[in-house]
Length: 520
Image (tube, rainbow, N blue to C red; front, side, top):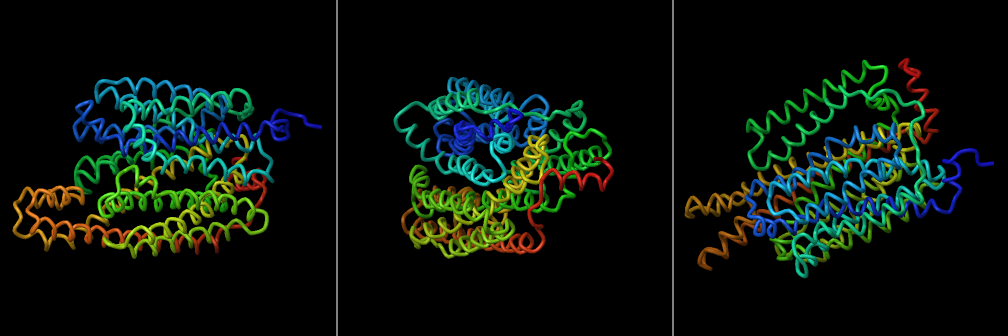
């Protein structure tokens, strides 16, 4: 006999329709994360936005998303995950409509921050709701499908934006969210069951403020680093202040009887290693995508829409990997699947590191397919292991915590890989800049885009060699970044393969771990 709503949800046919609503929720967030890559030049022209304002149109979304995910997940555990998902979707849809009608850059920045805040509510709940819908046996398949939905939005963003901007006004890149949100809302209303923590206590507001300000400061410093450098005061204050506040957050949480989030979940080895894998995956894959997009556009000469098309092997491989993950889950230990996934990621990166200015697309396509398969095998079982390690009452808090760490890891991936790339680029390009005017030399050193613009304004006898040298320098820098990330992936594969324990029942494991520290 089915005795409670959760069991009825797991037994009912509507669970797959509920999953469809969660997939659409992830898809719209993935789209919004990359859709502005293509739209920023148009926004600059239409709104008169400065370079700094364009940066903040993107950064406002990232800062709000990163800082608010953990408290949003905690609130969802207390107030109801279905209820908070609906609120998040409503806010995201409304802010998308308002953003499409903005006439100033400042107004769009504010709306992007609101979109990031509502995204922070939605993103951790995509995973946190799954245990209330699917049984432990079906959960790996559900996690794989939900994860693919979120991931697919990332490469589709530039592709969709390119088509929209060709046929419609710039506001269409935000209005495209609305029909997706409407369908997701209907699915959430009709098919997603309510779930919450029945033992919820008063919210730890001091911990919430420390976490939000600390993560926001840390990510702010990372965002500003490419513009001002690691030694700039703004960067140092953001990184240093954020780190101090987060250290204070950890110390505060460990002394509370009712913390914002139970950090002692990290004493559960399976949770810790799965979270580490998920975080490093965000660091590695975001860093790779960061260096790959300029290569395709400025070295291979592909436009933004064409770049999205050239990422299709990655999309297809992720889908294949998700299917394989579902079938492997019941036959192969999780740590073996995750380790194999990161080894495949490393292999794909090594293949891509061989790409140069005249290599062509074939090598890139092969590497993307290998990496896509590796991403699916590495990240999706990590999500399943994280969910299986948490008590069902704290799914929102746990998912918010791991998503926050993954987001911070992704931000660090862009900053650190960008610094490595820039150093290698300058080392190889500088000998070719002798004799150029100071302004042209500075623009060429600043970025590959700057070098391309300078080369096009020079006489062919000077511009041609400069363009070839810049493309070679960028390809060389990209190769170094990819080899570094390949080494990181191999190291993670070995550690997870050796140290991650076998599967254990989530609640029993969590309670046993908490009893050892006197909190259960």
